[in-house]
Image 1 (spheres, rainbow, N blue to C red):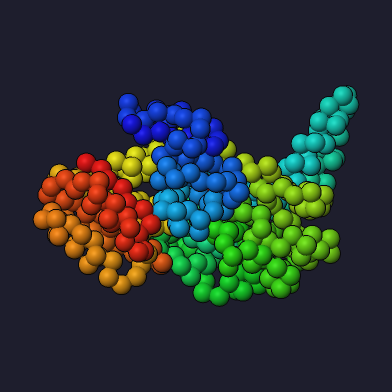
Image 2: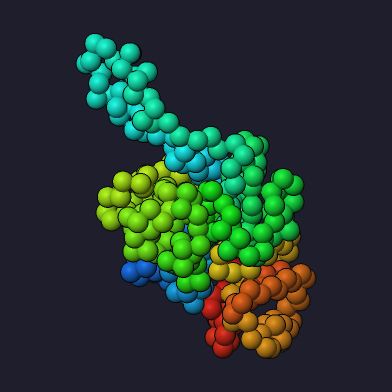
Length: 387
Ligand code: MLT
């Protein structure tokens, strides 16, 4: 029986896929799996029992990845599961930044008691006029699941779309509309585009990437959209850019007091993936990844360990080992089984950066002593046994 703990509410449509072999626990100390949305885990003690964390969403900046990797905890996210929800918010952001729809709405509200509202509206409407987005240049920085959907949708709306992503995957490139122009120098996006939208993860290398020098390159009519993560933009530089009309507008899903006070900022309370569909999709995907990992040891969409899939074990026992990516590990594992006459039927070993992962299917069951011997091999971080 596996136990799972939810640090945030997770959609029931996903949780119901945990069958009779799973029980929900309120105590993380008993959990094999943890599901999380936005709860910050950086200061949490992660108990020995936890093997896997499923983030129902894309960003993993609330999870201490280094600590998890060292403790042998696989962290999964759900790339793409909420991408459409975020894409739709970005499209809304493009339109709200282009025409003063919000100002117009509040003006009508404020005049609702005025008997001449209808005539007054015709006179007042010029105060809320704007521009269309068709034909304007949109720069999409980051062409992952969300960036691609945004780029393709904007191209379909008649925008001239420029895409920048030095790390784009082949799969992602296949999905990109051929109307999207490939940009190799991000500065071309800063200089040329009327709208710039960020779709990169928050990492040390991307934190503050939109700083005063990036803002200085942009057109004074540029609109910057950030539905990825707040700290990608240096907030001091941004406030100054808005105050001096260095750029036209900032649209973001990440509220902070300083930015929310700027009149040319449009700020939402992290609504990107707050749709029924996105929450359901993320929960379903996270639960599926957790189950496949706990039951079969298969890894899909892990952000700290390599992907590895050996299907379902057809032999006597499956052993999975998370280990450091250093020489001689496989020789030691094979020797440990071989010395006791246990034949390895199938094996897959993959690495990602500092870590390696091996799935081994055995012809005979290995006893606890042998598994403990493997646990003690220098460089081994976690060993799990499953049938
Ligand atoms: C994501 O990272 O998936 C989105 O920002 C939405 C969320 O945080 O759940």
